[in-house]
Length: 121
Image (cartoon, rainbow, N blue to C red; front, top):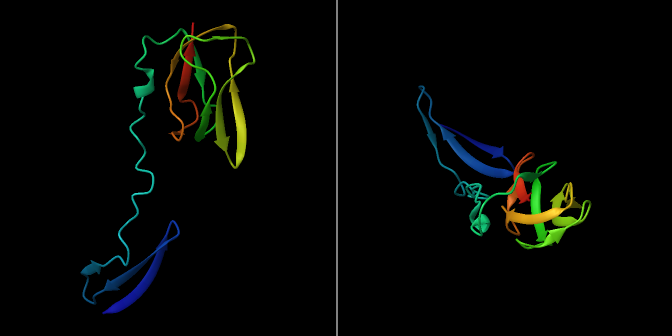
């Protein structure tokens, strides 16, 4: 048997390999369940119907703040959410004047590029 230490995504695993073709894997630490990507939860959007204007994530990141509530009026260029990407805070702004119809994310959510964050009417 040979023993190896393998690092995957920054987590070290001790692996024992038997001679003869069969392999036995014995992780030192259980595989981290770090960020079991929450099922694109539009749970905060339970407040009603989606609006006709989508506000999408321009890049992947994490939601730091929700600045507007459903039903609030917004002007073009006014901040709706704050998205952290690459250690920078980016304000996600309204593309046009309208009323917030839904907020599809919550603080702490991880989002992918192109995900619908909010909708406007």
